[in-house]
Length: 247
Image 1 (cartoon, rainbow, N blue to C red):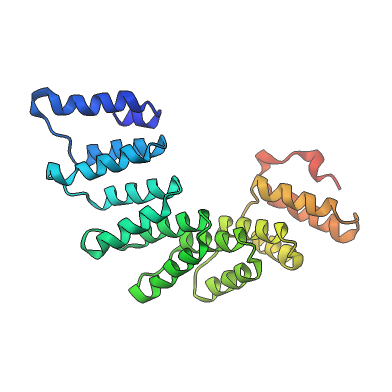
Image 2: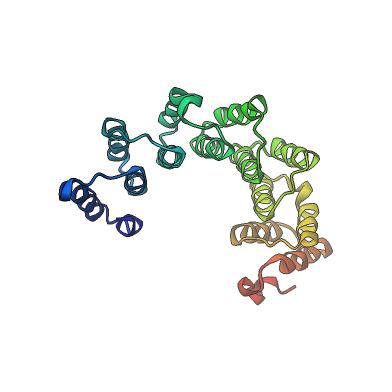
């Protein structure tokens, strides 16, 4: 069944799921339901996934933490953030342990659905609940600021993150650079690239493309040549296309 779901062969998975209940009185367990619910969400069949989730308690099966994560993530990935938040607040601390993974799912979902105010409120709740964010939380928030065009706030958030003892990773730098380049806040580009070089991080393909567009828009002076050399150092060797970095 898990194999069918991974290949998005949902009808075959559902047939097997129903067969389990018919043969010899066997009953699906919480894990079986979780696999099937996740498969339905991945196939975009949210209504069927929610119906299956709602079947669990009448079957005397109590959803566990993993099941709630699957449902919340499935709803968020299918742009049903309001439904995810309703479930989260409805069940509350009684059934859903409010850990950082749950908050990361909701913050990411709200941010990507254009509900960044909700994402910010959820992030602020972490302090109230005594839940420390992790690097994934910070990356999601910085990405959200950039997506909303709030690049100055993203840069401030980046600096506060370091002040609080959280070390940016390669994803953090790539996300922030893309926001800076998209909204023409070029003041930090070289500083961030030098930091990446010092930490041994790499640029991803999207960031490289944006940096090259940025350089094309400038005159090819000594500063641009220096920037090109720096970019060349930050591209993984297997991805380097030599002509692109010829100075």
